Image (cartoon, rainbow, N blue to C red; front, side, top):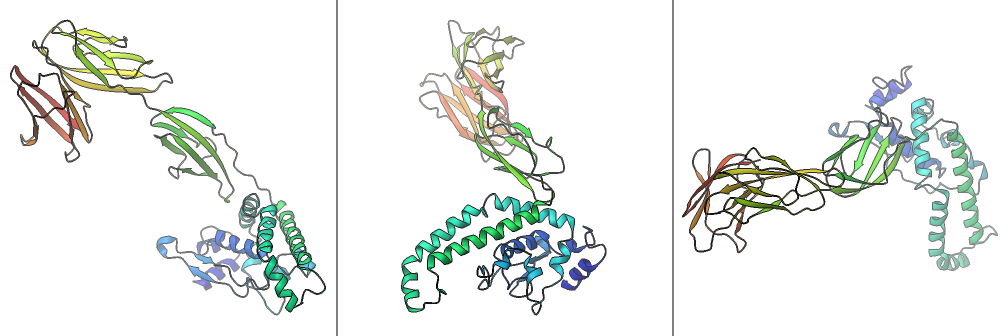
Amino acid sequence: YVDSFENALASADFTDYVIGYRKFADPRSFIDFLIVNEFSVNYDSYGRSTYMYKEKDTDGGKLKIGPPWDYDRAMDYSNSSLTSGWVWEITHPYWPFPFWWSKMYIDPDYKHELACRWKTLRSNELRTDAFMTFIDSVSNHLYEAQGRNFSVWNDLGGQTYDDQINELKSFLTTRLNWIDQELNSIPVTFPQFYLPVDTVLCKGAIYDASFIDSEFNYNWQPGPDSSIISLDTSGIYTLKVTDRFGCYSKKQMQVTISEPSAIFSVSNTSGNSNYQFIPIQTNANYSWDFGDNTVGSSVENPIHVFAHEGSYDVTLNLIDSIGCKRSESQLIHVNQAAVIVQVYPNPFGNELTIGINLPNTESHEIRITNELGQTIFKGNTFNSNGSIVIDTTSFRAGIYFLEISIETGNYKAKIVKI
């Protein structure tokens, strides 16, 4: 496999994405290995002390390099000549390195990927001030011990411990600046895009970022690896947009989800056929459909007169202040005894609520059957509010039939599990 990789890299078509070296190796792995050995000027890298492995086919099957190790010869700040030049160019000729590194470096896409990765790291983990802070933290931790050490083994060459620390800082700063200058010649741009900082959206709103560039890769956190996300919960969403070279930008969006409620209660008013409907959400636009060919009422708490006994599917279509919509329906049973039966939601999911205004002394029975006539639920217990919540988790999706038997008659309705 390594022979195939080297033959592809040595060929005239080595930059070809299909038959070139990328067919066999993951260049991003090689780039990270290069970076950790170059900023530290590690003489033992590339041709020596180098691990590699081949991924399982199920993980991509590519040749990767690492983990990095053996750094006792790195950071030789006593040799100022090492602050410039790539390590594979300035390594001792008796310790040759594989030709891989110099050959990949003349691949324009590889250099572009390297520049993207370097500039991204330099703005985060590999900032110069981050290095200086780390050096200070370690040198301070060792400060008391180093005094005891060098009083016994005085091998600082006439310098002090602080002198050595300052030389290390100077060496590293110069080295980082040289790599900056070397890679600044490669034109790199990071994706530019707009994301609202703070926004209020309706539950289930779709945000599509593909307008930025369809060639980019997208990752939402939390969310999918896609330009499109459905927003269902409030919180902070981070979008990472990456180009084909690995250059990426991140932005955050604080999302507040508006989820209006169209649930309503029903009460009997002055007459047996007069019913008042009261939604739990106020300050919204309302549109009522009473299920008897009477539609369009926009009153918040309408009173409706049903001309005949029967079961009516009453629906409230509600729009809140930012335009979010919600609909809820209830089956209302109207009879001369002013018995009100409420069934919601319908269609239902894992819960079904049945409400009834029967006197506690009146006998009743609830039965739910499936399309085969098999009884799925049977009961007769309502709580003090005259309602019962049925756990329908075990119900299969499909059509069911609800029947409530009371002394003054029977109430029947078709209900649907989704």
